[in-house]
Length: 99
Image 1 (cartoon, rainbow, N blue to C red):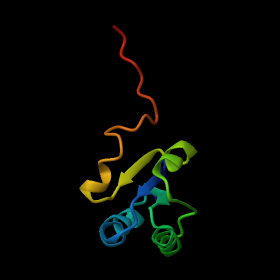
Image 2 (spheres, helix red, strand yellow):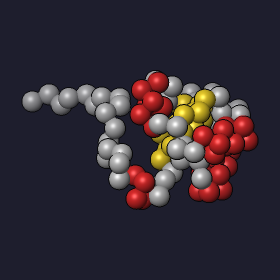
Image 3 (cartoon, rainbow, N blue to C red):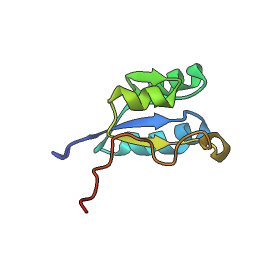
């Protein structure tokens, strides 16, 4: 196993793409550590969490982001579902450039 630090990742969306493409790839990546999954349908989030031993589930992406568990987030949702999400969440805050 690599000595590099593992990145704690949150998964927003637990549908077909998450199950078929994203989670298998993240599970195979030594540097990835998926620590939370979020889906509007609690059963889908719980099923993905159980399948991949993910410790936390959420039904609200804002709660997942506010929790502080994740260093990165993978958004796996249909484009019309993403329209309610900000383009860049205010998490973590970007450092301001000096003038």
